[in-house]
Image 1 (cartoon, rainbow, N blue to C red):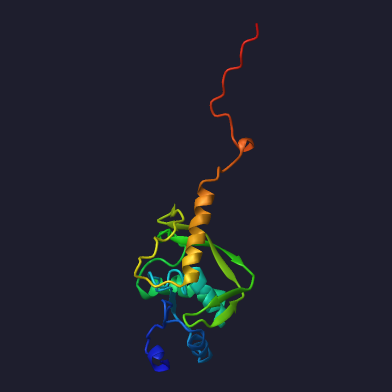
Image 2 (cartoon, rainbow, N blue to C red; image 1 turned 180 degrees about the vertical axis):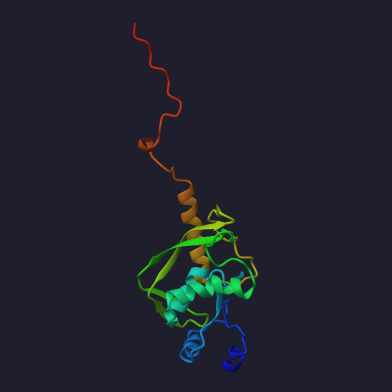
Length: 191
């Protein structure tokens, strides 16, 4: 692997549903071989665990010992460079595709595809995403197709999420104090 990296082969972490293991990444880092890029390899079998999403996958690299700047570069500028794309930086004339994250300094337990658990020192929470300069509205993933094997815990979590979202969407946003009289009636004339 070291000879390949010295020849210019770019090392990638593609999490997926079975390809990411903490002990392998930790050995790789110990050998001085940083992954150049990181991706979720998100698909129907990894979406509800173990990969979940890019911020969670990035937290897993933090838990293995990479620094936040290394992880952010592996998810942004490095993939753009590897693909010969202009993105990956906020410069004049570059595509305005970016995400804004809250960085919470709190222990965040994460697991790999083999149920090994580590603690990330940070949690990355997406607050907004822009594509071509326009805000991208948050959207839930489609339900898993019936042929995707999910655990009982995953089924229960999805049912809870569906229940909670329906409750949130059917609750009025504000009470009467939060409303304005949009069409005020004229005051009655006094006689």
